[in-house]
Length: 120
Image (cartoon, rainbow, N blue to C red; front, side, top):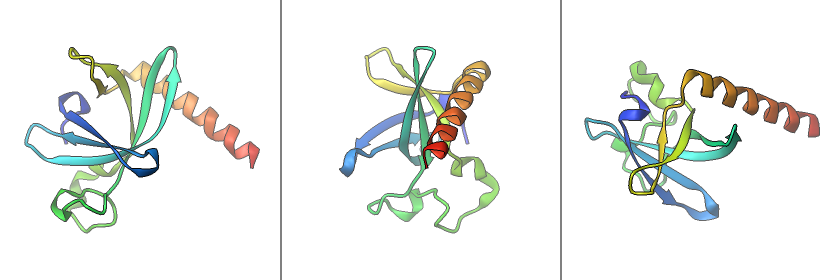
């Protein structure tokens, strides 16, 4: 799969405030993700994008674990963090974080998960 830097993105607002992100790679393949949560780290926002299949999606465009497909491209099925930025037109876009940003986001995410676990 092409890196997130090379993908275009569209957002669709779904019921219950669920945001579906549709990413298209250089070859025109579409990948569907749900924006699971947003973390703010060092003044920047990062979205956790989780692969999903919408009921209305055509099976050929669906890249989630429920459907049988070639698992050579397992990276397509993985959740990941993307940095949220504004593009030239002022629209929200997602880019791949640097290694340093990724480490900071993972530390914040792990702290959040630990906090939630302790609350239970």
